[in-house]
Length: 96
Length: 271
Image (tube, rainbow over the protein chains, first blue to last red):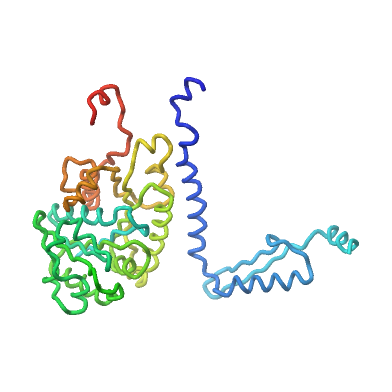
């Protein structure tokens, strides 16, 4: 330990910056959710739609994007699915 | 026009009642006719912190249910002029508080010429807490430099901006103030406590004051004498500054820097 280190706060003490970072992430997330105006049936509908898609295509959770846009007149439900690579798809078929 | 001021936090034990007692006393000492109301039905404690516990006869639920008049239930503070305490009920069910009942009490107080009505909110976000903030014009959000308190305060800020009467009627929003309590500058200095700047950055609410962690707060509650009456105590002075700011005065923040532990100050003990 150098002399200089004696005057600096120990790393283990510097937990305030960890606290701040965790809070910033959490609160941003909670605020976004608080303003969420999606209908209450949305999570269930999402699961069902995913189930139907997976009957035909093998997609990851993050390959499917559900979004609701709120306009003054209407709400727009947007669903976009990134299909797997065509090459991967062929290989998958060959293997079966 | 009476100013309805709610003291709230979400989390328990952060200093709402201590703050309600101090701020209401400070407002009264500044010449404002002030009533402070305990909304914690079932767990009243404001009476104890204000030192009027032995003079409680009627409470807010008695008034709402028509068993006592407002004037019968209001307890005049003996040491501080212009200050009145309306205790919570200790025995009645907390559902006894109604939106209409609370509204009528606040209106009567306004008609009686009260300048400030301070509502001491219970912890949590249940009925008592919602009613304490519903009619508010201003809010003091009491927050400790600690993760769960900061998170709960943020949640409370969300409720203040969406579930108050002002929000429902599309009026101008509740004026929000951040009050940081139990602040320990030396621990901030060593990086083990969130700083004033950190908390302001996260919560993004104007800062009303910073109350340092202080022995004087426990002494004050032991004695039943609001800490603001202790003019020599750091916490008392910090609350006095907060009241002055609430009334529009500009005052520099004190007690936010670590005390210099110089050779001399160590030699002579207390600063």
